[in-house]
Amino acid sequence: MNSEPLLAATPSGDVLELRPAGSWIASNVAKLEALSQSVKAEIDRSKSVKLDMAAVSELDTLGAWLLEKLSRRVSSNGAPADIVGVADNYSGLMDEVRQVNRHTPQAAPAPNPLLFRLGELGKATVGAREDVAVFLQMLGSLFTALIGVVRHPRSLRLTSLVYQLYRIGWQAIPIIVLITFLIGAIIAQQGFFHFRRFGAESYTVDMVGILILRELGVLIVAIMVAGRSGSAYTAELGSMKMREEIDALSTMGLNPVDVLILPRVAALVIALPILTFIGSIAALYGGGLVAQFYGDMGPAIYLARLHEAISVTHFQVGILKAPFMALVIGIVACSEGLRVKGSAESLGKQTTTSVVKSIFLVIVLDGLFAIFFASIGM
Amino acid sequence: MAEASPAFAIRVRDLVVGFGRQIVIDRLSLDVRRGEILGLVGASGGGKSVLMRTIIGLIPRRSGDIEVMGQPIGGTHDHGTQSAATKWGILFQQGALFSSLTVRQNVQFPLRENLVLSQELMDEIAIAKLEMVGLRAQDGDKYPAELSGGMTKRVALARALALDPPILFLDEPTSGLDPIAAGDFDALIKTLQKTLGLTVFMVTHDLASLTTVCDRVAALADGKIVAIGPMRELLQSEHPWVRAYFHGKRSQMLQPQMR
Image (cartoon, rainbow over all chains, first blue to last red; front, top):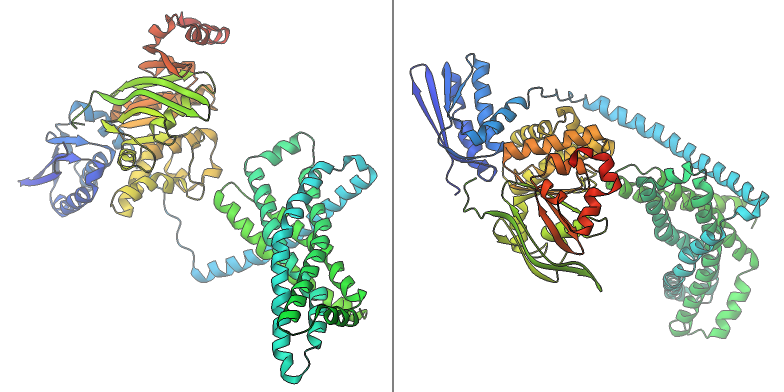
């Protein structure tokens, strides 16, 4: 039976008599809270209070706590409340709630908003320095691990390396071919459309060839790989960290860098140039198709123009950047993975950070390479 | 609690649960009386947790009927199960605390989702629950990752009790705790069961818990309940697996007084 909760307050002289009745349970909480609010003023007016619980038909922790709160309000006014008529089966519960909430911790005072902002800025600055340190540390330990492998080639984890190559290289080919093919086609279409106005359609091929081979092929593939494989690395290493798998490795005398990180980063460094090559070819193919069907330029002419427009240098400029971008993606992904703390939220946060940071660094690196190649005349 | 009260908190009839070709629970029937603490023992991988998860609707069953507080249980998204969910609290083996919420928010979560009440009252109730399970108010601001194993179990218990459910399911509540902490936890469950009038369904391997806390013990073997009753009856059971369980070398060593 879920009877209506009630609270009758009858003043008799100095004494206020409170008679709770009915179901004082969690499902009635909205009414109960209102009821106990309504008698507060009367409690404050009266000298002492008698709480008669004989009519309570149901009671749980929540109801018991509300009644206890009323009786505490009385005791803060002076004379403690007199609680009578507690049914036997509820006396344990009433005794229990009498013990709780005695020492409410002081809430920390809200910090000065200006100081708080400044503090956050300071933390972010220190954090940025720490980021650089973490990056360099990971680079260093990878290099050490690599030297170890060069000295003892048998210590290379070949199975793991091949498996990672399969996952991030072979399995990525379809999507990368599709995307780069479309990008190549779009660039060619834009070239024909705009160059046609001043009769320079044939230069579209130069633009497509140089743009794809030098910049776009490698950039798009690197960004795709950062999103596809970098995030996977971070999430994998992060959940291994959460489940103490990485600690388990270390206690077995194995270095997590050798076992987990080197094969992953090495696979990226090997796979990214190959994917870049495949992607660039797909983009050039896409450009060629558009040339034939949209620009009225047959395959033979397209190839001949391409042959004149590009040289091996353009190809080298693009492909040389790929391993460095792979290294950056791998290091960022793995070090962010190792920074995951206990919670699921932290795993999500580090994965986001990993992808954002590695794409940002890939583009910065591309800019630096552009300056470098320009100054050496490539 | 004076509800139109069935005598049994949980009734399971001819339950069959299987995965693929394997039958884990084979035409099992079990009654849990109101207000008792029932301990469930069984071999590791023998289907104890499967039985518990089937009762609370997490695992689909092949056939059979389950009633909790007189209400039939279907799948997790079934309406009956949803309304039954406020009638039970569940302590998962690993705690299953929400890792992105603080301890206090974890305990408040069921309150917030099911009731309409002020933040102030919610804070007070959460602290009250934490103190009832033996934690301090300050622990409320910690995150689950910062807790020790014992504290995690206590917080999970506080969350399971947040709505004062009449039934409490415990999946190996004392596993991974030291004997002192496990003893405390047992005492805590007993106290809470007395004060709140709970029915407790407990999956455990802890022989000490079985003897000190449980009113009745059910033994699960070959997908069936092979013996059920107070601990001393189970000790007299002739079923070979039950004999091996309670009279094995390890049990004798740990519990010489049981004989």
